Image (cartoon, rainbow, N blue to C red; front, side):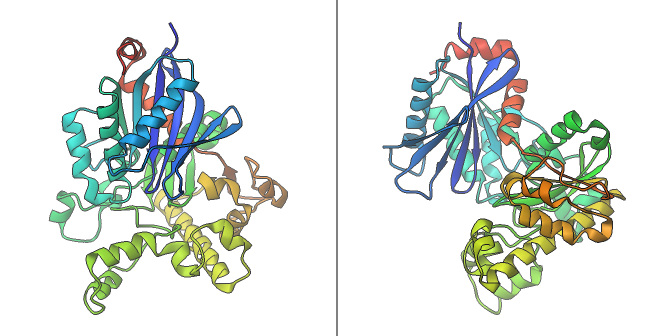
Length: 403
């Protein structure tokens, strides 16, 4: 009997990344990756399989429920990989609140609870709900699991998670949750495998992509993080503002008479690198631009990241290493260099040739702090957690009835 097929969904606000895995025993082995960018027209499924990239045009129209697009995507995977039909779909869900402290099998109650958290993550959570419902409709016998970005930070003490507001609001769930937890879990596991002595120390991991955050890892455990109640907090991002004086929001709503929808659009979609530069949300385009506002946006980005590294080091009482990860962190030497230059007072020194080639270790031999570049893999974490929820035997048995 061929091995069961596991699919992961990692949704963004306008994209969906897919991971395709075969399950051997209890080990998910990646066999392919895909993505759909809903900002492009016509839609296409972009496949990566063993280093080979394939663009598959999608005939299905985009609908609010995503059923047609997902159905065509599932059929393509089924037709092009000689495995059993889908036995399991694992989802990245951004917000788990205080209820979800680890991965879960999705049933009616869990789905309802995930949907209740939509107001706390309005960019990402609705996409997860659509995907879960689409699989339920299209492949009703396939098991589904959820892995939560917030779960990795659940162990942080209340001192870290509190805002200085009325205690009753903390008890009602107004607190710092933290995000990108699947990425940080993967980085912690990679550190334990590649640099076991260092992994036991005090590390700041910087997940820098279109969404960006930093996390203080001590012995592989989350101690503090830059994002708080929502994915708006912390450092500036592609189109999100990062940390912002709450008085600005009050001023916009009051004196400037912005509507709530206008404020939400401004903070989520019109701020960050795009807002400051007025040019682009893409750091690659800003790096290539000679315009001063492009340079200012990147300088602000690096300035805030370096400041957050220092704050998180204070939370841990020391700093042994900085790890850069995600799209910008893994592939943009100029931004890594700009951040590290601002951390020179901490003894951070990078080796320019190593940084230029995106080497795993980019600090030089005189640096008092190790500086690393480690590629993240959220889909691998989702797959592993999905299999852990449904053990290999149950998964293999369930795959025979998948539709």
